Length: 212
Image (cartoon, rainbow, N blue to C red):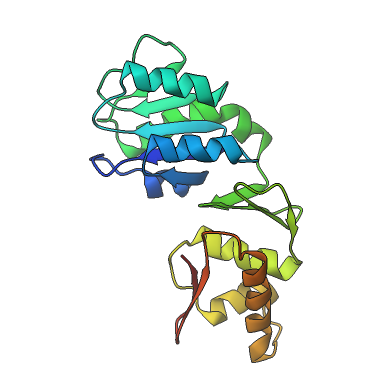
């Protein structure tokens, strides 16, 4: 799948957050400093950094990026200045959604080809094969039960959308009938394991759960 860190400010006319998040494991930042700060402490680094900024990329900014991101490829969706560095790819902001995704896929091709067992949302990274959870800035890998991993996987795939208790139960246990409190117990244990995350599992009366 590949991991993308997207820096997208409020001035960007073309919003890419949901477009990229729908296809790749994506972490979104409002500014470059917040991205660089996390990069210094993060265990799981991205395979690609995408900057969506209508103001353009200045030479000082390029220098700052080059000094901090190492060999991580960088792509800017901007009509502004990008300097003379050939390693810094620029995508025309007038491209349509599919053209932008195609350009991003070119840079992620090595990672797409080998596949990825992780899906991400904000500071949480779920390994679907090993049923483990990794939080940004923490080195400890948190083991999950199969049920907890299935619940979290569904919530990550539909962030900020309310998932009903019935949908969660059917996704985890299929047609097997379980006690009403069984789902609540697993949600409670999952919340406990995620207590250090900025993400929380929110309960919505009569409409289920969501990640916020």
